[in-house]
Image (cartoon, rainbow, N blue to C red; front, side, top):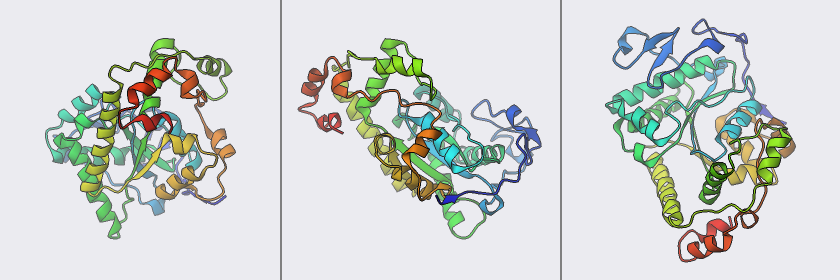
Length: 329
């Protein structure tokens, strides 16, 4: 099948841009950037040269911002994309934090749009240098609605729009790709209930039959209904906010979903993403090839009706709402 892939010139263990061992490279804490283990912060930015993206023509990775909330397939999706795209598979670092409080604290630690813009430019650039032997290099942002109005968060998005507008004019810098992925919020809530109630592993490594057996034997789960409609409304409002904000700020993005990737009988959506990224197989990719690339296994094929002990109650609660269709999707 046809594949868009770079030529990798770097060794496996040494990042030729920073002369550091890849496995020793440190990007913590999240609001700082490290170059050769020297701290680069916004206040100290003039002490170091600005990071410059490697042109794609010179085999630089495609920089990606991955927007996705928890329990939505983020880990397996990114690892699969990274593996199929070519080069060394890498995870997408949760550079902003892993929950709402951490992410809000992260953005509040920066006081202005300018600082958010600087952080995105420097951090994402340094990550692509670190991942110089990968075809794509990304950071993950769980886009909670309570963080999008903060100045530094706006700075991140405005920097992407500015950077890409400049790149389109003929500059050498690669465009920053923005991949936005959602999942049916009812399934997100079921997943949360499952992992709280059954004390199982959050994920199963592909081929771990014992772990998969535990997940697939799960039934008689109870989905709380007292605040279900409000949670679904909150999710719907968040999606609308994200889409309207990206469009208002002129940030080009590709939107996909868990359902399009994992509930389809073909690999077309995976190839659509690769066409957008400009790397990886864009023709002839099969589901078998995608499944072979999974690091984590799909943990349930059980229908919602068979999984939930209170399915009829859930349907009754949603019957007079705008969200009953989610039970059929």
